[in-house]
Image: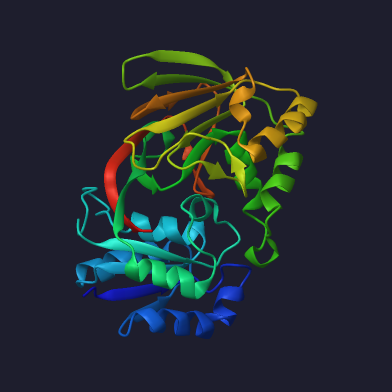
Length: 308
């Protein structure tokens, strides 16, 4: 019998989660007779709550929200200093209630509250990988952040920085795409140097560099069509510079999962990726604003028990 704690982001789904909590709570109670719950009140608080609950002996944490909520809770499974798992046997589940649910969609979590609660109750845990970003002192570090879906540097990170000022209650499914259209008008590709775990070194000018554990980001864009969250590897997606009209023309390939057809798109497998740049290049992870390069991305293999 699991000891269950539910972590609710009431601001997710443009604030609808808080308003429909009673319906969600009823759905959870149908499948879990005994559980505790907490509401988050500020960014990153779900990580703090998750760590506290795991230390208190809870071994099943259920998030109510979108990918951001899932990221925060999943990050809380690791000790902030050592990076060690707080409880290797604990699991996480998610009841979707957010505007940004790309990883949730990829993992085929039902959108229906009752069905997703039933899935968490009855499914076996699947051990999936996590991504870890370590920033060097030159980037304001050392600092570590975790991601469950996709991190990227370049254009995608600039989009996230630009839309971060939009009130969550005003964001929708097309917020990222609209942000992409406005950001690309003044964006220039960045020069980067990469070192992969096999020692191979690369350098070039790229529009986007995506480090993918999942396949989808940006509100439905399939950036890494073959990525698997439990294969022990990232899919590193590097996109060469494109003109503005070229970006628009190829954006449809992102939504159809066929971006790899473009000869300017390169997809590589790697477990560790070191990246630096002579330019100021920002990073985003799971839709959150990160730091800047230089940074190292590392796969944390089979790090998380995901109820799916």
